[in-house]
Figure 1 (cartoon, rainbow, N blue to C red):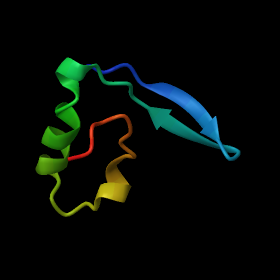
Figure 2 (figure 1 turned 180 degrees about the vertical axis):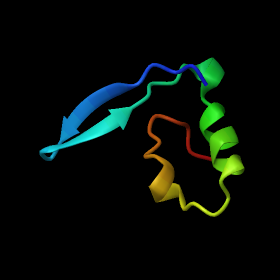
Figure 3 (figure 1 turned 60 degrees about the horizontal axis):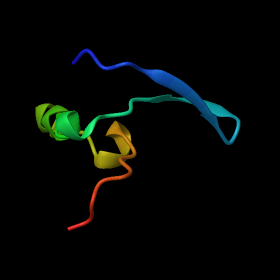
Figure 4 (figure 1 turned 90 degrees about the horizontal axis):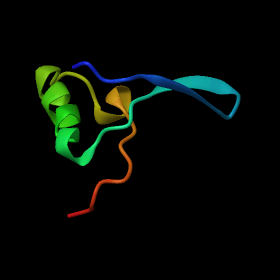
Length: 52
């Protein structure tokens, strides 16, 4: 996917973080569709998207 991965520390633990531009935010849903057996919490915490 050629996305820049950043590391951030929260609550003493390190996490990988990928900031998506508006044009590429649907990539997370494409990724989730490839792995239907994974639950959402196993994939990523998605923030900043408009609620429907």
